[in-house]
Length: 175
Length: 313
Image (cartoon, rainbow over the protein chains, first blue to last red):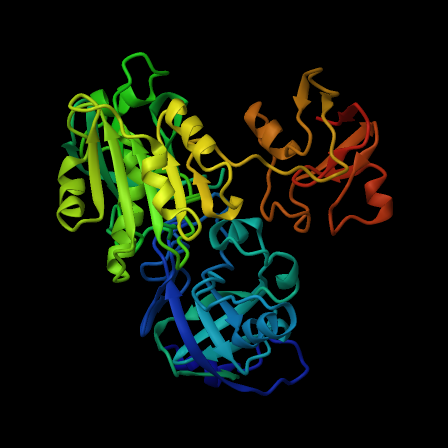
């Protein structure tokens, strides 16, 4: 864990408006290749600057659906469990945590507000680079019409500034 | 280009009857494969650009493999010959996502298979037995020993399958298989066209939702109601491409070797934006402004309202 980055410049790289939250990691998922089912993990290992051990988008591995367009800011992806609840409530769509194909399902974290900010995922430090965009690929895999309902709430792409192990139940916090 | 299919390795190749070879395909790391319904089928992407469709033989619960059985058709188009003659354990094969399959309701099931058409029903039988059900009967009609006999014989022993060898005795009528169950069971058939035709006649008076025929072709794409076929003209190269009603312009361009960057394929990300010069595009995207639409379209979702559309490519 890169403690120095916490102490030295907590606000560096973050927009000036403060944002406070304490959320929790509810599910962790990885898969080694495009199209394969996501597997639930009790813990995952984040490698700074590269990605998640064993996941398709680990930089250098390049086995994801979008790996033909490597993206330095897509080392790990997050998704709000509240979106799954909203899909069920508002659209009658049963989308499970392993279906959305992001790595980390969190509760109580305002992901859309984090673009450009740094935050703590367990002991690791992430920087949110951009919102994830839904894709038809996920409809192809799940067989569910979820493209439209996921517009603007399809999760968050992040760069890993400081790696380490993340476990289900870990806290997600602003700096 | 993004990967278009699931990367698998042939982990087992075994003879499974006269002119039949069974293959087990697995992820290189033994990861679970995309899920499927009993008797679903997959497209295999073979060397030389051949794409062939085969039913999955294994039960969906055995989720780390796709087992297929291929009958070598000497006079076929070449896919089965390639698989049976040239594909060995250790070879890599790309596989499309599973499609179709049987929706097994709570009612009793009658399965009628001709020869290698037994494959989807072995998957279904296995799934039903795993669910504790034995209220089904698999009739396998074959000339001589059936393919995959070692998988069928335990079902025969369990009283849920019968083999009808047409060399030993005339084929029983399909009515004999079906009549006792009319009214309460669902019936499914897979096999040569003559058998399927006979099955359709024998079940013509059954409710449609309780009759299923397994054909080895993709379900037809339903084009949007405003779709029409048109000629796509590439202004710079002069090339002209026929686009069928509802077909994807992006796919057509890709198939013609024109690489268009793309990502969401749903008209949002804008990566596949292409300029258009003449014609009347039906845009259907969710991201271009009215101004942008006057000169651009998104190739992943755009159709044409007229017979001819000229794009700046």
